[in-house]
Image (cartoon, rainbow, N blue to C red; front, side, top):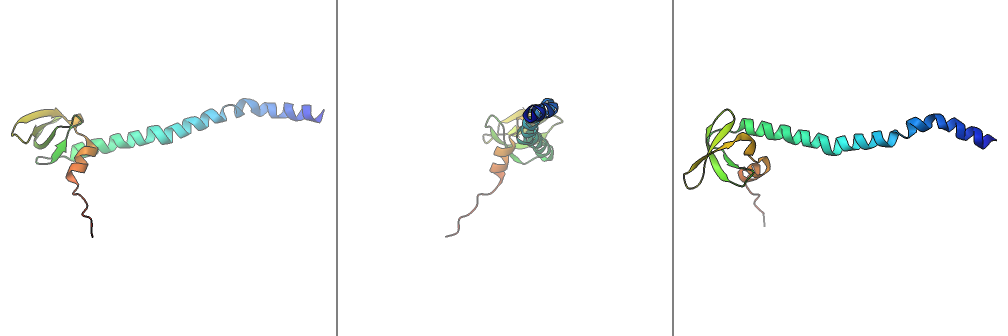
Length: 109
């Protein structure tokens, strides 16, 4: 009899209790998937907006070059052979360009 009463009493939380795992999954998904992606997009946009003439960049397709002109939505990139190619600003790779412009660490012996 007491077991029946306890089972019936916990039944009131049963509806809310079944949603708690789903809510936790959504919270974890937000913090591990969505939030880092939004931060990465903000960093990319900030980096591209700070680029200026003469900066060395790498496009997402792997093209290396130096910015020859900055347009509203495009960059004119000069390649090593002296050719100039116009790329959309979204084609600049943040990670690759930062790695190109960061001097390698010198190992001390």
